Image 1 (tube, helix red, strand yellow):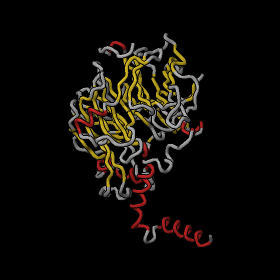
Image 2: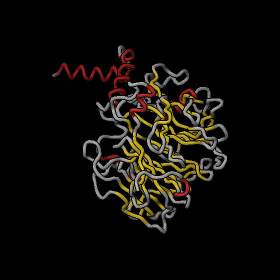
Image 3: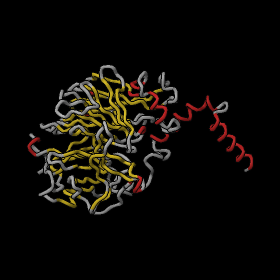
Image 4: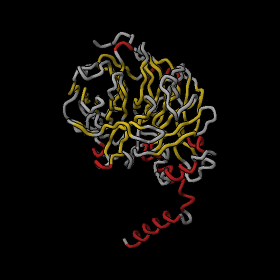
Length: 421
């Protein structure tokens, strides 16, 4: 007993002060812990393993609030953590169309071993007017967890796939190009960012053509090297992040001449770096970071550009309510908060992970609370216009199914025949 205790104390001291042989073993320890976390063998301290992130244990499902006079109307696409599928629902919560995983077609076209043995999570989507759907596919328990970007038609037939480990987000620019985030497991250090100890997960800005061919593939880490913002990596990244996921880029927004903002110019993209609590602009031509902002939010998701401002889901930054969630609209030049949603009559926002928001045509904001599996449409003065909740139980039977992401489309946008009426 006493010997074991002394060995434990010695191990702590070797790790704390970097005494030999810890420097030799450190990379192996980091790699092993990263892999074990991704495979679900140990708990992920970032997202937790219980209902502390806002998971909902049950309750009424479907549409629980609908004020037709306040709501924007239309149809909503969402992906659930429990299905390899996407669902299109009307304002009453009825499923009118669904897309599912074309696994056999993917194996036939790209090889029998292309699909992993673990389930694939459907994350972000983009719906075209004709019913074609872009979808980001992620491994649930693997490293890297990014898997592919795929395009399927309205009948779930595979059109193409890009296997550069896309994850989290996808959007289509005004130029028709497709913007997402790639990922690799890097086994060597980034020159100039020596504080990031390899191996680790490395994120890339991935831009493809309309048919899925890679046009840009730019390392976000290398984009900091040689810029005034390189020091921010050392200051803001937790270098002892045992998961080896130092940046965790989780969103991308391209320049749009119809929706301009001062900090994103032509041929540039806005990205969200969750584990730095930061937003950044990356230039596609130079491959370098040109702007960086670390604000009042924490572990943010889905920054969108709207009328010269940025609106985002602040997962954990409302410390006045115990590090709960809110939606913030920010002027990126002055950092003034121009609008926010946090708690109001009959709602209290909280999702410790995931989540997103979308400004609708009438100015309302559709909020995806991922962990509790809830969609909330709010007016700008904080009134509930529409609420939808998932029903049933998630994997393991403990919680209601999560919602990965949702997006509302006006009825006139959709030009295809729905499968379920």
